[in-house]
Image 1 (spheres, rainbow, N blue to C red):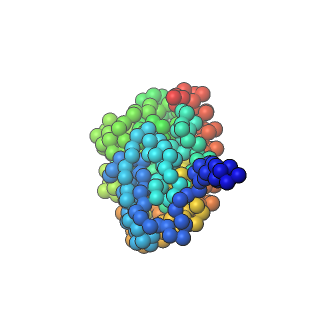
Image 2 (image 1 turned 45 degrees about the vertical axis):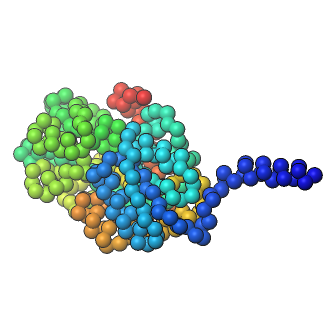
Length: 326
């Protein structure tokens, strides 16, 4: 009988223990935390996350170390987070593309709505459609009218062909029934160079604001923001111009499914404190981003809503041949 009882207890340990974190929530964190950024070093996502982690480290009481795992439009780093042990010591930066766009284009080894613990949102990214300051277009409507008169003559670009910027612009051009040629580039910085050099007529990117400020380019439309960007209030949003297309861009924090609620709360409190600090807000303003905090429930609801919205928009773009299913 004792042997049977021991065997039963051993089986119970084997099958039940993986469901729980081995970390005692009351002692968390007892060692450094790893933050996975699914993008290359030096970009805005990397810079904002590193600043946030620097400030959150002070509140958490343990070092938050950032590692970069770029690849696959953010998918490579996201997979690493999904596969991590749910003890709170490996978390990741969440961006719009790998959770709301790519899942509708190709099969992935994770599910947005099932495989993660959502911790907090910490930023909104303000994209802008801009043209050279020497161009004849003083408004986005003028650009559209020129495109209507000259089908296929005007060219534009975005940081990536599978991005929220591309989706919103292609939806706008379709709504206006105009043909503007998309020119692929190797990221936002290369696109900025192409615009400044006159090789394309328009560019959508959050990295264009310094050139708007120094007068080299002219911002015609805020893309992907509901309200005007407070640092450039003279530039209207695409919603104001009559394009009711939801393609926001956000940065957030998440972990693998199964993190203990108390551990997730401790992480969230540290990031909330960092996000709402004047130091972080000033830093975000210096790189032309917006500090926005949402807690776990609100952030999860936002991600799920955007996932559903993009399913519809991407299907339309695939049916029209703008985006190819992979």
